[in-house]
Length: 503
Ligand code: BES
Ligand code: MN
Ligand code: ZN
Image (cartoon, rainbow, N blue to C red; front, side, top):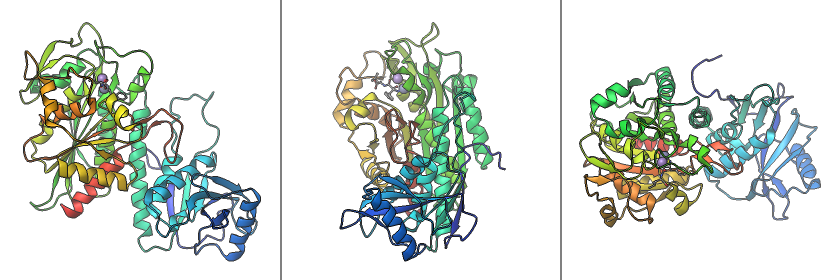
């Protein structure tokens, strides 16, 4: 057994035929569509013969299954060497399936399996990678903090056999496994409570994970941060006994001078009380997710190493706990961000931009071609776009590229503007900038405008606000359970792959 840090995903194997034996305890997951007769119809595949398909359809129809999206129906199929069959609906039939429809169906199927250790699926004939990702992410669960009293008794999904006749099936399955493992690793970080995940501990776990895949790791502690002039990270961190950190993880995959360099930056506030500008008590516990950007960025650079992307990727991750105390920064304090810009801290709850500004300036010293920064930055993201749509800002061209890729992989980031005039709202009477505007309007965009001040000339930059999308406080859906979602890990990885391919 591997003891490497990070999420331990199920074992995934690829087969070009339905195994004749050894799957007696398995559930067979198959996609069904809504036929012209409005009844569940098994999607044609090379693994099941007409007899098996007929048997399954008779059983499904007897139960009233229609093959609608997200509909699951479990039936027996005595002619097949499996324990049972789980049909998952895809809705009306189409010639081509978007990846996320398959990922989502696999996720819905995995969530309905509860207690099944072994699955075989033909869903993979439509899209191997999406099937693997959906099954792993849908079966994700986090029970580290449950004692025997409430720990789940049912075993977790452990063995997945994906059926596929595609040429690249093996590589696609491996990639899907690595991608889903990265997302699950980000979820684990987010779901670990703030009592157990504070800056020093987060930094140690990031180091262990990074070193396990051969990344170069550098960690600045509180002394190094003060000495280095990281006024934003120090200012936010100084209300807490648990000292701040800055973690840097480097993947050197680029060969030759033309290879692209990408900087990743992620907000790592391990808990956000608001500081002296303290938050209301209702739902304050959701602020355990305020390191969701950091979690995604760490998972992404680790994934880049695992997939051996031929580019350089450097993650710069500021970590701090935002607490009120007699040593905390006050509204009205002035701090100096890394690089020298001075800021009047009018609201200590706008702390994310303070730690991110330091990290962005540091990241730009490496002269990257691209910089992607992501953070649970503003409640205004949720007001503008809701709980599942990340806001993407930045340089127009790169922003649009990131949003388009995000939509193509089902994380659905949406491009938003950074209007020039909003900068006037960040004027301070005593310092170069204020950390909040005096207006209630466009809070997500104001935060983006603040961050833009720190991005070096010539760097293609995108900022992804995932305040709500990083953490699901609603019901489980698709391949997303309650709690940490891992968004936007897959968006960032898709962008890295695109850059590796096209520059
Ligand atoms: N971490 C919060 C943003 C947040 C809110 C994330 C809800 C997830 C869910 C951030 O640090 C914050 O407090 N932002 C303030 C900014 C304001 C003071 C300008 C906000 O959005 O209210
Ligand atoms: Mn805050
Ligand atoms: Zn915050």
